[in-house]
Structure formats: structure tokens, C-alpha cells
Length: 132
Image (cartoon, rainbow, N blue to C red; front, side, top):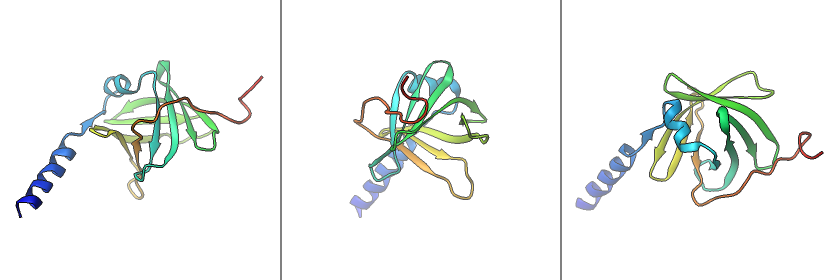
């Protein structure tokens, strides 16, 4: 009984330890000049995003095709717009003890992505914008 109560307390503390990255200043302070790799909860890397100056970003799925875009803060969410996609994507972003966690604002089918810990490196982009 005591173990179960302690485990519940730890879980609550872990959830409470999440810090919202809900303003441009907070988000930029965490991501500035970084490449962050993401997984969907099972630990297998599926994408990366490079955060550059002037709130520009480059998103890449595992196959290496990259999309250029930009980000901004709006109503407590961090939003992204990419070339070739007219629809902005907004996320509730939190900093947890395990790294960044982002939940899409899709009310019907929200997606949660997690920062992969201990993964470093640069993106590999393939496609028409690569090379000479």
C-alpha cells in the first residue's frame, strides 16, 4: 500500500515538473541553434528539426527529405509553417525531466512527440534542394 502511494506521488511529481514552453522567449531559449531528434514514445527516432536564427526551422523525417519553415508563439502554443504546406501546425510544448514534449492541437487525433535523449548530429537532407 505504501509503495503504491509512493509510486503515485512520484508520477504526480514527474507530471508537475513539466514546464510550459508557451512563449517565444521560453521556446527559443531551449531550441536556439540546436537540432532536436524526436520519437513517438517508443524511443525509435522518426524525425528531426533544426532550429536556426530568425525563428527559421528545417524539419526532416527519417528518409531525409527536408522542409524549410518558420515558427512563432500564438495563444500559448508554438506554431510552425513549412514550404508547400498552407496549414500551420500548432503544438503545446512542455519541458519535462526527459526533455521536450510536444502535443499537437488537433482536438480529434492529437499527436505527441518526444525529444530523444542522448541523440546528437546533423540532419541529412535529400531531394531537389541538395547539391550543386
